[in-house]
Length: 290
Image (tube, rainbow, N blue to C red; front, side, top):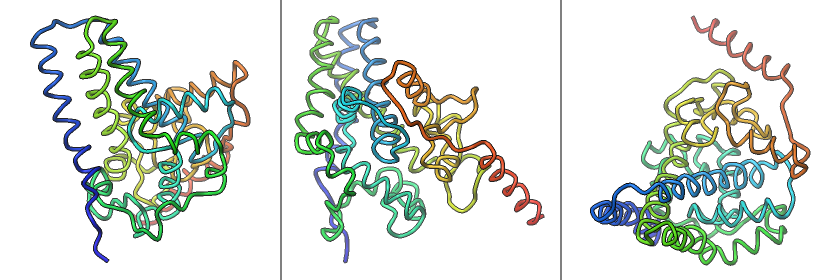
């Protein structure tokens, strides 16, 4: 059956960049650079993005650690502000991606093309037979269900209204909406989308070649450590993506910081012996191909 276009998603994903450009241009035409607005941009870039990586991804999707209600609530509120769907839907889709990576059932299958994996898959409506089928551990979590039920209200409040309000106190409501709201929203969108597209095309595969996922330290810089994607696809239950001390993974550092102050526990970590074994097996496989 031919897929139907989801015009709500298409319009949202095409109009938000347009409005971000127009409103940001209007703001800078009438204002000089304001450090308060810059600080707000950095704050909302960090808190919405890391709520996706530490919350939606490593906590809810993969259960790589446990945390308390307060931290979960922060991730759910500001994760919604990233406008990437509810944690229930996002995490359910992501589990399917891992279970069927590079195959037909993969929601953002890179073999259907770079554009499709990056953003095109969101342009289509889901098959009604598979929509709204959520894992039990997610669909019975009261906080996750609360966010799913009120997702649009939470997303608009934390992702657009709050930046506008704080922007007003920093000197310009328009600046807050344009820069910390819309520009930040679009930037975080495409940073996340590049993990589904570019990180399945460009980079190294030191741990496995059984799927297309690749490690990219450049993408790790823009995605709070998510760029070490080859490692993640082989060891998805590890709370780390960048496993070495020098690898840029602020999501890992945040989780460790939460553990240090008693707000995270049961951090899952793959033993070094198993990691080294995977790398050695890859070396042997490549030598056999010479």
